[in-house]
Amino acid sequence: DTQMTQSPSTLSASVGDRVTITCRANQSINNLLAWYQVKPGKAPNLLIYDASSLKRGVPSRFSGSGAGTEFTLTISSLQPDDFATYYCLQYNTYSQYNTYSPWTFGQGTTVAIK
Amino acid sequence: QVQLMESGGGVVQPGGSLRLSCATSGFTFDFYGMHWVRQAPGKGLEWVAFIHYNTNNKYYADSVKGRFTISRDNSKSTLFLQMDSLRADDTAVYYCAKDQSGYGYYLDSWGQGTLVTVSS
Image (cartoon, chains in turn yellow, orange):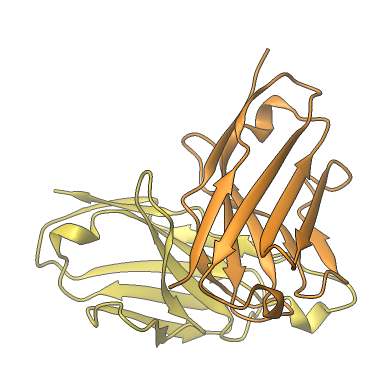
C-alpha cells in the first residue's frame, strides 16, 4: 500500500501570508493526488485534483504542484475563510488493478490563526 | 447540483450492526463509483470502501474487510454501508463521496456525514 506523509501537522499563519503544505508518497503515484479542505460539521471540499488542476469555482489563490512522490499545496495569500484542515489523497490504484492498492490520505494539516 | 445525504448513524453496542444509507441527487448515479470515508474523533480522514458504478467490484480498507459491506441500489440512487461486528475504534463520522469516474479515481463530492458511536 502507498503511504502518504503530510507536513506540517499544524501551522499558524496570518491573513495575507503565503502557506505551503507538503505530501510525500513512499512510492511513485505519478500525478494521482488530490487536496481537500475540511471544516468542522461541513462536507469536505475538493480543491485540487491530478496534482495541479484547480477544481472549477475554487479561488485561484489555491494551487498544487508536484509529481512522482512529492507534492505541494500553496495558498498564495491566506484569507479568513481558509482557516481549516487540509488533506492530501493519493488515488494511484489503477497500476495495481488486479493486486489492488487502496486510496490513502495524508495525516492532515490544520491551518490556524496566528 | 450534486447532493449527498447520509443517514443511519447512531449509538450501537460493541459487536452490534448498523446500516448507513446515502441518498444522492443531481447526477446520474449509475455512471459513477462511490466511496465511504470516515473520521474518528480527533483523527484524520480514513478511506473505508469503494464500489464500481455497476457493483461488479468492491474494495475495502484492511481495517473493515470482512466486517463491512458496501452496496448500492442504482434504481434508487442510494449507496449503503452494512457494518457488522462493530468495535469501539469504528466510532467516527462516516461520509459518502462520489468518485469522478465509474471505476475509481478521485473523490469529487462529499456528504456532510453521519456519526456512528460504538459504546456499551
